[in-house]
Length: 171
Image (cartoon, rainbow, N blue to C red; front, side):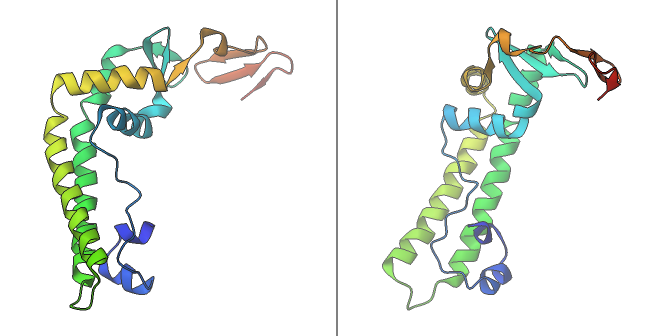
């Protein structure tokens, strides 16, 4: 699968057969956009009680603005995806021969359609309502219950680390 995103040489070296589907392709929906954001920024974001908190290096801080700035990257994320799709289409198209089966030709045509759809979707992702819809779905994907925070009364967070109050050691 990963060879599908590589060069023509990678195809040849891997003994690639036309028909590998690139792993990175998402669809062009709000749900897929939320998943893109979760993949790109999920380690830096959580949602508690419907509000976004961002990791500030030492603690989770309420920050809806930063979440919105993350969503503003959707267009760039989808453009990179479109570029990978284009490269895959070019690589697989180069493998087509007169003897290629109708299924192989159809697959290459579907890769071109995916590239075109992603290109169009990238521009669509610059619209506020698309970003807001994606953030709304992302809230659901990254939801944590308040009780999941600060579970250990024996850990004390400081700017330079976390102290285990039982042992006095810094983590």
